[in-house]
Length: 305
Ligand SMILES: [Zn+2]
Image 1: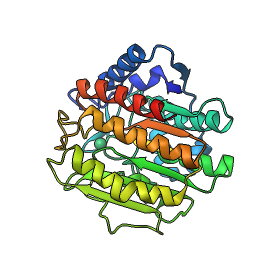
Image 2: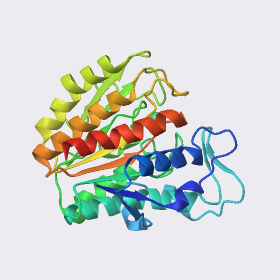
Image 3: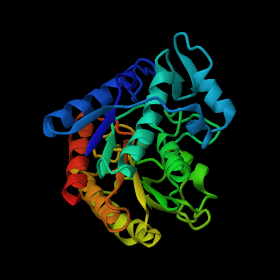
């Protein structure tokens, strides 16, 4: 397994008291380094503009990369940029691209991109929900366009619906997007009736749901969709804000639940995609939950490899 990260991802500062803090990534990196001392760390390259423009409009790419940010620049009520944010967003997206390239070259079967800002809320044209570029979508589009894959799946277990990932691929049968998420909750999309061109599957979880409901949603609905799709490459939007301690949501998941879904996803990738899994850090706002869940996630992936 490879780990991609970059110090620039710690320099994105959305403002004092913001839950999407650099301390989140520090917590993940420290926990993963202690639990997996043998893991191969690689520095994430910057994504090219061409790669970003496969999924984002010119205006969004330009507003993140070309406007000098002096102090704090607000993009919406909860999304802001600091002087280090553009480089962080480039490295976060670049991590996914490099991980896809490494797996397709046979250098490893699994990669975890420990990066921020998160990405799955960013739509083709709008940065939102703490997200600037949709890194997992950039990686999926790269797999399609640079490697010629025609069945790429994104599995998203972040507690929020990845409206951006769904928006970007809703009309593209080469990419499947499946998500479990709390409802009602931001961004209030992701109803089970939203099926795209048959390439979307959404499962909603009521506030207070615990591991049993979470596992049932994946076992009964989402994993069968992925199984039928037979992804050549599986991308994971790994958000840990479904943990019971998370301050932004109300699910009651435990690290063991994240280990379970990670194992199921990696086993599915083993049946259809030569075991290729690229996981990208999304949300998770309790530092202690982030530590425990990121380690559980990598255990689950590795045990199925
Ligand atoms: Zn989230």
